[in-house]
Length: 266
Image (cartoon, rainbow, N blue to C red; front, side):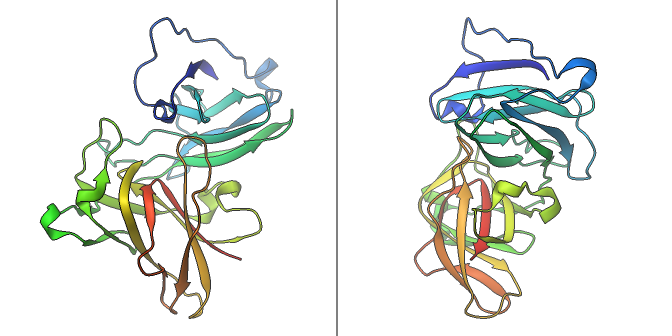
């Protein structure tokens, strides 16, 4: 991977936004002799778009609590980050809401525990639907059809966008299981659905209620979590239940951050 740079960021900047601080210089990292798989410890994979095509030259980030590695994928989409164990990593890309089609951030939570190289396979960058425009604060609480059947009930006045972003609309894309990394569901649980949310990394001071389509039997208990874009950690689980046609968060409970939403059951 070319032009991998290491920065000591505060947690906010560990998300990968902003310019490199003065005096920081990139270092070169080889992918291995004759294009061979690089050695561990660390992680490697292939950056792809929602149509499963490699994204050559795309920006990839491997963020931890206080530092963030980033670089450009090779022309064939391959990337590699050498990372010493142990480390909690949010492997991701940055959203691009002005692209056509606009894209959300790829996100995969990874734990590096030894000197082995973790092959993450394909890291898919999801596209975003048109979404639903946020109304004025006077319309709070607002029920918004975010996309792919996902409904969010939120208070626009309680939303804070990520640094430099603007709150315009809310959107969601359901991620096909084949395009979600294996670690996106907590160990010991079964994945029900996973969505990427926009505006990415916006936070709410009040719970955001969620409803998603599901054919789980009525009464099935589920859990809603988001994945931290800073270090890949899962948020505390929010309980929910199926009614036969959908799953929803428990009354008066919900999410507080818009990143990747993971719905699971035991």
